[in-house]
Length: 196
Image (tube, rainbow, N blue to C red; front, side, top):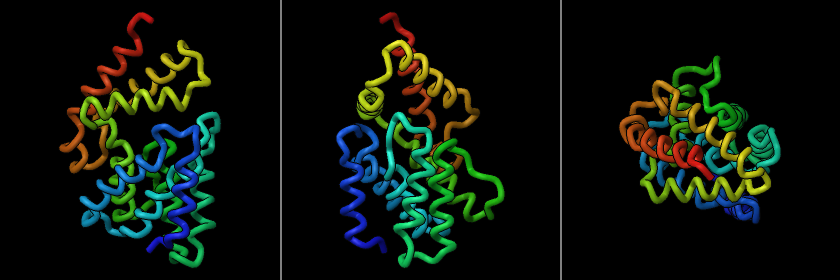
């Protein structure tokens, strides 16, 4: 169980003014998915801690947000989780940097990491109006990037997702969001490449 005081501190972090998508709303959306699919997790408790902390540190101009968030979890989970669970939760957070399951995990931990990564990308398969708001919010978080540079960079990221054989790692998420995610990505890429 995550102490209420820790949740309050996290809410303050996720309420920072520069956040538009990576806010407490994102955590609540993931919690809804987590509760729905909790039965599929082999180690639900460390996954839940990873969910709460995975974007606890977020600076769009930094390159180490995931690492810093993992380190924060490692510190704040002391005394609340067994050491092995803390290490696993931190591993999940670090995996969000590349959105790939790290090598060397056992089958259960690999499956849990894959499902968590899919939940984190659930927004790609959201209904059109929700996805479009997501793109608007991401642009707001990167308002410091000139328009042309943002379009090129964001387009490259979305094309990278679209180039995957499967956007989602698990059958659950693939069935739930795969088709709509491809439609959303194609539409977003077309908008980024449209004449200004």
